[in-house]
Amino acid sequence: MSKVLITGGAGYVGSHTYLSLIDAGYEPIIVDNFSNSKEKVLQSLSKITKEKVNFKEGDICDYHFLNSVIKKNSISSVMHFAALKSVEDSINNPLLYYKNNVEGLINLLKTMNDNGCNKLIFSSSACVYGISSDVPVKENSNKDFVNPYGHTKIICEDIIKNISLNSELNFINLRYFNPIGCHESEEIGEDPKGKISNLMPCVADTAIGNQPFVKIFGNNYDTRDGTGVRDFIHIMDIAEGHLAALDIIKKEKVNCAINLGTGKGISVLEVINAYQKVSEKKIRYEFFPERKGDIGEIYADVTLAKKKLKWQARRDIIDMCQSSWAWKKRNPYGY
Image 1 (tube, rainbow, N blue to C red):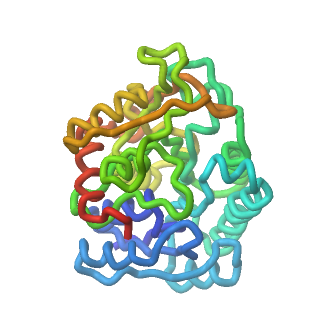
Image 2 (image 1 turned 120 degrees about the horizontal axis):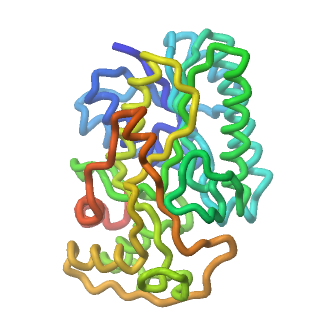
């Protein structure tokens, strides 16, 4: 078995990717400090896999902790998910985001270098494209940012690229778009800590009766129904994309950014309508003014993912909504 370190592995994307790694025969080791995740996720992962999770609690900004984990376990590959990710929170607390996201990456890279660990899959974001005029956006589209969270991803990508120029570091920066949905076991799902801001948890909470309506920000965009259009992608497609990326960097030098998306745009209203169909629940919504930095339409050009990773998304919006609703019915108030 090949040991893979998953920083932030108790989080939404990290936990689902953990399961894909287990299924593929890897031996993942999770590092998390639960600042943006919940301990019960580990119990759920153990229940699904029927194995105890190899877990180390600690902060990625703590060099001695991280060094100990990598050294003792002879880690050869890292998937780095440990980052704060709320756009709204990053605007209100920018220094916290720069410290955690940028300092955490620098500390991880130093620790990897000190231990001869040179394979990195970095969790990036479509936020690096800012308000892009290119639709669909390609990896060579101009990078820009409209909030501190997006800026941290650009800085981190640049750091990784620059480090690789004079080292053995082999990396892929995976820029994924809008992950939604849940694992088929219904044991893990999207259960954000603190204020809910992502669309799907809001829709699910409204369908189950935890909140009266979904807030839709903006309904006058130049789109087919006036609401924002995004590239929503099933979380397990995202997880499988990370697995494909890891398999590739074990065989060849890659060192590039790759989009993970479906290549298709879906509007906010289309997501709500699909969820209503699946849940058989009336989902109320109300329109609010668009938020600063929001854009009308963005979705991925996925040509490079197909070419480099031999990967493409396999699940549609109904699959995404069905898996989310199945988990929500079983966990109406989260973990």
